[in-house]
Amino acid sequence: MLELLIALVVIAVVAGALGFSGIAAGAANLAKIVFFVILAGIVILLILGVLGIAAIF
Image (cartoon, helix red, strand yellow):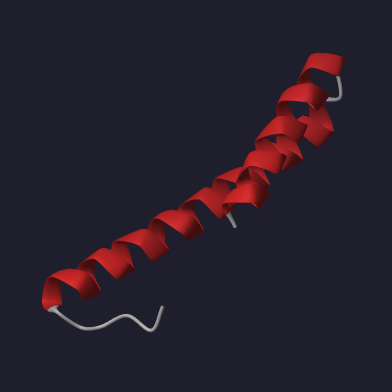
């Protein structure tokens, strides 16, 4: 999932530098969504760890 985030950020930066603002905006929006999904997963795992509930991983 982190690889997807990095790839989307790179695509957004390259597309923005080349003047493809529509593609850059789309990639940046997808990167934001993936970032918040990853952040939510980390928060959930931290809460489970504090409560002492064993994660399945």
